[in-house]
Image 1 (tube, one colour):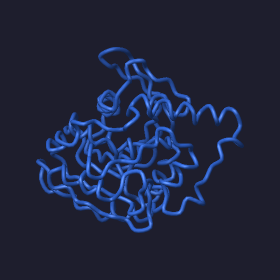
Image 2 (image 1 turned 180 degrees about the horizontal axis):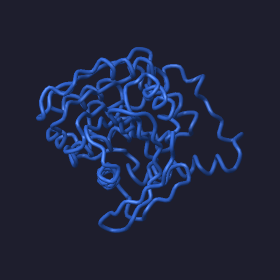
Image 3 (image 1 turned 90 degrees about the horizontal axis):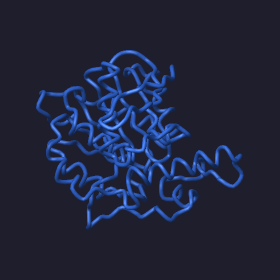
Length: 267
């Protein structure tokens, strides 16, 4: 794996994005959620080790101590920057896979840059408004409380922030601040659900059946909003399948159909 700092130009200011890149072949652009880039690194290694292709993992600016440009204040702006990053990397036929807020970013990328994005994978994404099945408000919860909602079996993933060194505690606080800046306290864009009708690439929506942050019915609504999207429910899995059920998620990717047409359809 190589780690690079890539500078891209945005309409307001240059931005430096940290990118971890490994493997060869068809590119997968893996977008982390509020748990930070560590939550997708292991899955990137599994994907590359399984011979599925190349894993490109950007660190959302502001996470893990990286600088966040002052204009990066929304998911849409982050998605636009990532579309420019794909241009800078000059990669084509990209599968964009995002978990949690990363799923929201991935959806915005599919809407903004379908020229390079050829497939979309939403993994327990957030961002749409589903009044009949709302997300859990996690804005005032502690990390242990969030972990309880995030996993089918939270025990292997519990972290007590109070015993971490000050540097690690600062990173966690910075991650939460960056998440709040991008997504807002409710982690919802009221207009996103309707706009998803404009997604024209094959889409797979994967959900954990034990997700306590955004339940399975929320996930079904996400899939129903995207034309031709396929919905898959993973048993004994919470909000972060790439951590809790990585082999099941990898199997879904390996079995996914190739895009049937340039105009969309199920994976």
